[in-house]
Length: 101
Image (tube, rainbow, N blue to C red; front, side):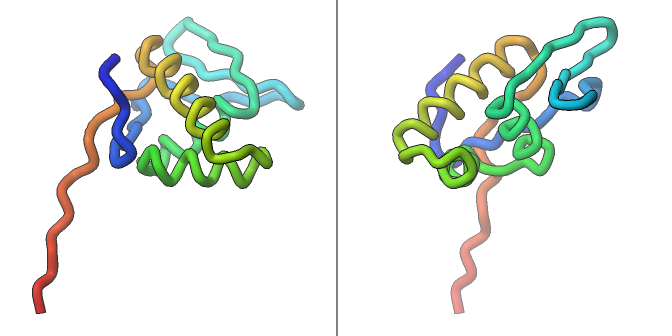
């Protein structure tokens, strides 16, 4: 996987579904089941709404009570693992239009 930029966006694979039973959470693609923890679940939910890496890391830090460096390390590891399994696609954020008045 390439280096993750702060403006990169994770997009979920439409064939993957999130399933929960009690405190346990799984991502399911066809007949493959991936049990995930709280951080991976948080990152997955953010990827469902196509959020930027920088925003996900900041929110993860707030959610779990981590410093920004811990949150960046955790989200980077989660994105890399989810991407390696083919559950998300990581791409650059679409260009934004500048509005000149």
